[in-house]
Image 1: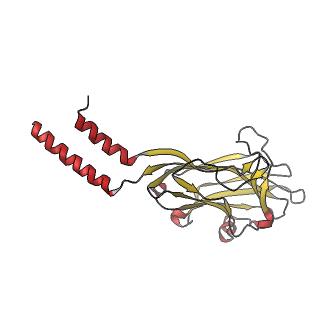
Image 2: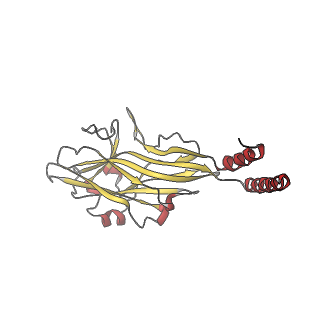
Image 3: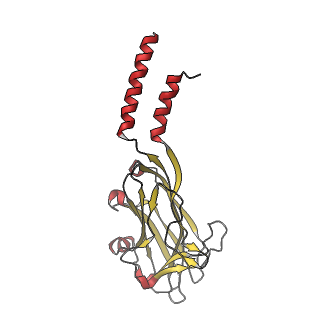
Length: 241
């Protein structure tokens, strides 16, 4: 059984560092009859921005689609997904980076919290046009943490003809130390490119989810309290001896 002083010390150590897990950002792109780029997460200690197209994606060639996946293995894409036509994307990874062909969002913890990330998930698909045949759409992730310098995880691709490919799910681990203890805004970009260039060639993206936890940042007064409690504990222990 803990003595009162031990219990007090344990409580002081635990409370200032409270942690809670959460879906920090979630983009399902709307509800029936209402498309949306806003996050549907319910976390109250962080803010997820709207899901925004990069400067290289022409506004006339992107939008919301109600095309749902035919396979049961991926999460339901209805009621809406984001689509990008082939006439506004490049054909290679370098084209995507240099052309600012991406979708992005930013996660910002409240001032008294820091973010510890675990994963980013998204569903993806593609289709080609009758004139160009099969189209391959490829997707890769970068972040502001290293200035968008390197890919996070692997590049994934979907290939299809006129009939849209079944949606597949990509899960990218963010448990690396670089994604822990983030106290400011952090932007993530999902870049994409396609092998075909016509407006009938389409890349699709859905169910973008950022998972992690938020931990309270201790106030300076908490450290002073810890020091005081530890000093008091030391005195009591010496006297008991």
